[in-house]
Image (cartoon, rainbow, N blue to C red; front, side, top):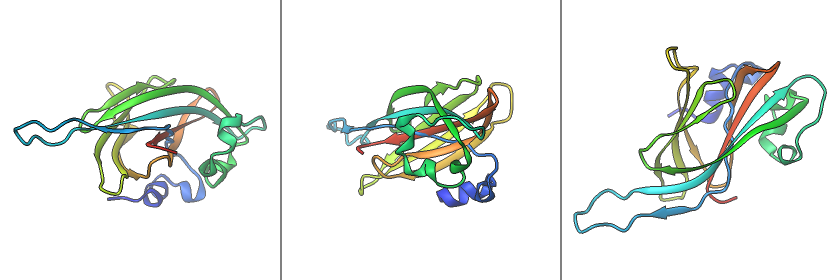
Amino acid sequence: MRTVRTVLASFGLASFGLATLFVGALASVATFAPSAHAQPRAEVTRGEVLVVLAKEAPGTIAPELAQITALRRPPFDSFRSMEVLERSDLQLRTGTPHEIVLPNGRKLRVELQRIGPDGRFRVKVSIQREGEQDYLPLLQVVASPGDPFFVAGQSHLGGTLVIGIRLGES
């Protein structure tokens, strides 16, 4: 499995380049009661997706973004303005993809693979556009509860879409 650093490097983000950003929000974990037929446990968690328009041109950074440590580090620290375009709650169920249409018409797909015994979330993320090759075909991430993960790089309105996903408790 690729680590986040490997993913960032594969998108040229070590020296800045294109990437895709995913932000999320608080989530609580629930399970379904097992039936008498020993079915696999379905796991559910809540979260949030945050879609940000980031620009290198001088401007303001939305107050709710200024406190996110990851956005103050490379490669994201080169953006001098950040505006929240959309905020979406989501509820992920193991093995069931959740799609969100992005402002540029592409679709963000997030799928919870499992919740580990340590409480961390294993998720698959992709960005797709109908009829075209996937922009981000598949990214697998292991995220701790409350820790957002990010991908950025798609052009939109003279800037870059930064998408973040945060699952679990903060």
